[in-house]
Image 1 (cartoon, rainbow, N blue to C red):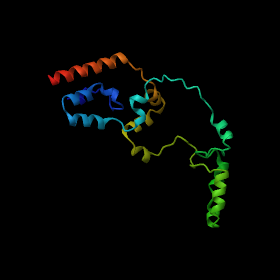
Image 2: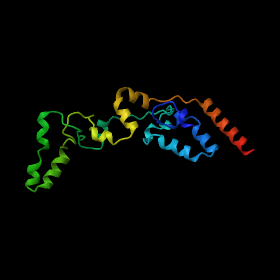
Image 3: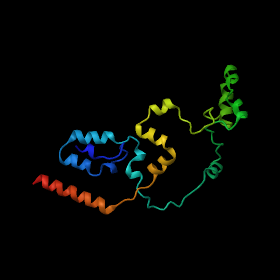
Image 4: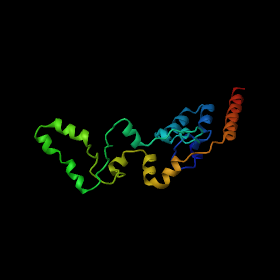
Length: 177
């Protein structure tokens, strides 16, 4: 069985499968092919084509502050409260009770209220994590070492890839004969 040959605990991208997908197509094993595709993570950012080495030179680099000044944008909306003194910003009930929603909109436009009350920007509720994929949960559990492992660039071995394509072509020719 082809699935038994896979050595990792979860499938992240098609590079882990090697030429198993090609073998499934050549041997007309549609169910095996569908199973292997279904086992891959649904997070497109984890697929191998996004982790191959970057060859192009990116020379344009501009920081966010300069762009905000250039386009005369307001300050970025904070994700969480900075300190206890900012708790008053969340107290907007008096504006709603006084039916002055236009004042509320104007206040939020001039000085945006943080999106979350919690000061831990990286906090993710357990309920939210339980509704994510297995890949996402493992990535969150090992966020320090996992980000380096998952987001690190892979080395592209063109010769091995060409050999695999050549072998697939030979198998296809043998099956037709």
